[in-house]
Image 1 (cartoon, each protein chain N blue to C red):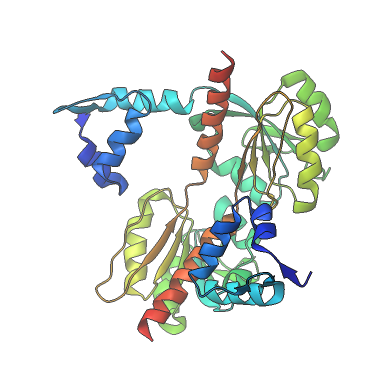
Image 2: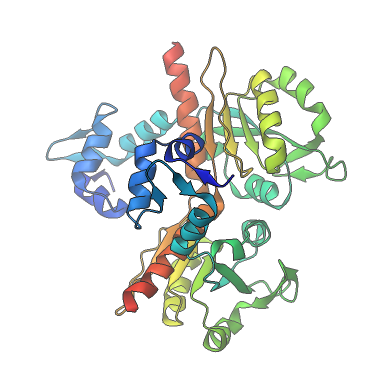
Length: 188
Length: 188
């Protein structure tokens, strides 16, 4: 496919054509009236907007079940990130390879950050450890957090903005439970 | 704490007091002007609205890294669901216990559904398998899908509504990459 219309895009994405056009116009607009969008160009432009080629240096902390799954399941490079370090406080896990990266003891985190300057951290650690570790990481230069720790981080830094995505996996499960509950109500 | 005001709730949740009051009013409103909300009662009412005690029978399909992590990491019971079956097409995994549930071969899925009537399915299977399996499950009586398969399911059934939560873990990582990209722009 060489080109695609906003209507076709809308159908595929479950949005309206007008939403698609408005959203893309926020970034300058890449289509032509009556022609639509050149697919290759649109893909490249959206990639550029998202920063998928930025290769942001990323570390992951905590390789319990979830941390391990995130490290192995997520294609970091495709999403603008490069996983350069994995850390855990459990020394039995250290030395193992996960997603091609060796797990290092958490005690080496500070030296690693000083040497390698990661800008993003994936937190797969318990709730109780998240606040302190995140503040330590901000001091060590981390500017973005992908936080799976069940604790809503709010981080500030005097000069730069700290970006946080707090992921609560269970929330979408509750959305489903609510939906099922609601179906039941309608049938009563 | 016995009671809480909408202002206090708003501060904790990063919303406005007016949003909190509006949202709760959609379900009847549980507060009194000048008093706020009784914490125990509010907690119970929200739990009832969400259906957290419904114990919806749930099966999980696919115990690769992600499926295993979901089964072990998510507290299904706390979110209105009861994990009653786990299935995989890899016979080497069958017979193992994950989160207290024995992994069964996918070939036994139909008989299991006929006997146990699960209403919710967690799909941790590859993209290519998602469409067909989901349609099979709808025929077997499943009414809600928590879908981690990187494929946007849209399901219909002649009599009942099918609810789907398509989870794209990587999306929030791209949000972070975009944020970092944007920070850079501001500094230029």
